Image (tube, helix red, strand yellow):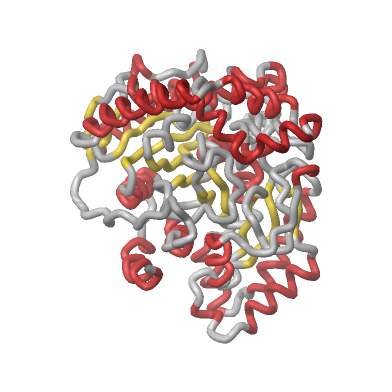
Length: 472
């Protein structure tokens, strides 16, 4: 399936991760940098790229520098956990006074208030840079379903960026911002992270408020975080995860990792699907061999997980999108991307009987999966089984999208959390990534294993308990 994306000298392109949050904070504290200097670097980096499909809107340069200066002059700002740290926001999440477009100009509106999760970042001293591109109405995993510039992966070769949070992944992979806010209903945060070589963290649903997010499937929606390392994820998550009584899906965070061995579930190799991509298969199996030498391994069948995933787009959950977008589909169908419009219309074919039958089937699968968590802590699978070029996706938009979601579609249906962990490149220079899946509220255990895989200490986690207690 894949194409060779190596340059003329056989050197693979890939992410150019910029300074981490810790490095930015150190520079601001030590005087070698400042929020204004950081803002200048960000503005220059974005301007140098031009319109590459990463951003749908950005704060004008003079306003960005003024906002950074205002952070510098804020009383007590230097003690804030994200003092002057720049970030982007997926354009399905509200920022007051900035159009929320969902990559559909005719749908756009200007919100009066900022989504609480984003406001917490601003209150923590972070610097809002702009809105990032997405598959229209957050419907898709490939990044091509947009009327704006279609983004490409940082690995070149005309590879897709992945979606729907395409711009959020690219903004981090290009080194423009250390983190970006994304969403993940069916893989929309993890797939583009995998295709651009960054960390994509989809926490347990309900830990980060979804108020101010335009719903895709409200019962499944989840804000997620793109970052260059686990430490950055920790820092951002500890700010964003907080009680919001206006969010009816809210729940408290689970326990911190208690130490000791992490039992890792691995599916039988015969159950893994790479869609004929031998290079991706070899890369993932090589990673598994390393993991088997380092962790306590439990063999776990993927069958119930995949059965749940099949319900998402081959079942009535697609109709949930019409709760939010049904009127717009009826009134302005021509304003919707043709592939997205086809998906929306497919939701009209389901009945209440279909919905209840699917809910009952899902409950059976949840019970089956719940028993598996008694024997493992984290399930490890590929994040994606193969990659595609933009041309391949445009030729077969539904089929390619289904393959991209093979390992992600079941996540929120089964109430799991997920971390996409970048592992490098295949023999032909394409990105590969492992996905760590955990039962709801085991976020800290999954992040601990992700840090171990990346050989990264988790200094932020030890200090995070007190921060979380202060937020609740």
